[in-house]
Amino acid sequence: MDANEVLRRYAAREINFRLANFPGISLIRATLRKVDFAGANLRKSYLRN
Figure 1 (cartoon, rainbow, N blue to C red):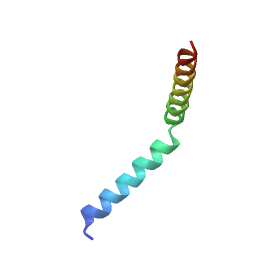
Figure 2 (cartoon, rainbow, N blue to C red):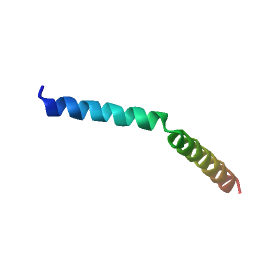
Figure 3 (cartoon, rainbow, N blue to C red):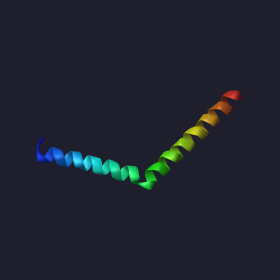
């Protein structure tokens, strides 16, 4: 394992950590979940009619 590999792994871990702690990401995920839920409800009501 050379220095480049170590740096690459460290950078990847650092980026993942920052993304995980970035408040916007969870907000986006929650929004997507809401949109998906609304879409499912729309499909159900559309199929019912």
